[in-house]
Image 1 (tube, rainbow, N blue to C red):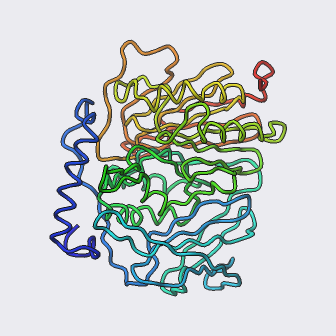
Image 2: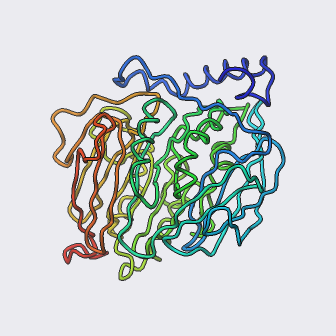
Length: 433
């Protein structure tokens, strides 16, 4: 973060003041970090510098909207057209769409111009080339998801922007996958808004090519009493997910269908979830709409793990009380898998006729790994390890899927953990309640 590239919208004096305030706030709100066993010293942040011109599109990422549309999001430092041109051949754009532009303020920080455009209808399993704001020097491409199974997800939690993160992203770049799921804790900006920008630049090479579907973690809250009392300002402005299409009232929780047989539900651990809350009511209605005769798999993604055999974050309200409020809904609907983050570890659990719970908060965050596990190991815990890595969920057909976990340290394509899953709807003993 040298020079004015990272803080062009602030004077150096204001930037220093904000950094000092942010450090105090971060320490106050994250006192639990010191109580967990972490590998010292902490890795240095990997901060990508801003070398783009004022109207060059940057921080480009995409997310699926409905079955055949895609939302393209990007940022420019100065005003530029909120327009995407696209086609199925490089340099040939026979379609275009116009979107909208917003910005936000956070204390002394003012964001760039945040553009988003929804394009489509698009053909399934097809590569499209596109450019944003009419800028000819930066062409991107993405591939749409297949219309039917098989389908491969990448799953990473607690990503951050460290050397560990770079390793995770490098491993993912070697995988042929269809969509990425991220169960919260994206940038670890923690009130220091320029880190949202550097995170956008860091993930752009991957996030501009495949849909990144994300949900909130505790590091997205960024609420400061009196100074900035509104939570999730940066997350909501930068990562607009398709909540409207699933009739959710909030960008903090939503659902979508992919490959005709998979329904994915993204829940918010840090917004109201009690029975009678908007999120609970929406989830109850969303699960009732799922036609299990056509939808073979239901996957839930959230941040705070409901089951956790690591000593970090044990007994937290967002884990314990959310499970008490919502677990029966998931069990009755025969949800197949629940992915969570928050704990810097990989941990897998299973239960007959209930979902497989997988904690995968090991993407590369600056807080390091949580190495202290419960001893003895709980019976429901199948596999656990404190290492950075990523997961892959290959949904093969309507009855079987393979989950694999890949450790960064190995530098090998092989999986360090692998398990075959059978969809609960195909088990005669596990029909929905």
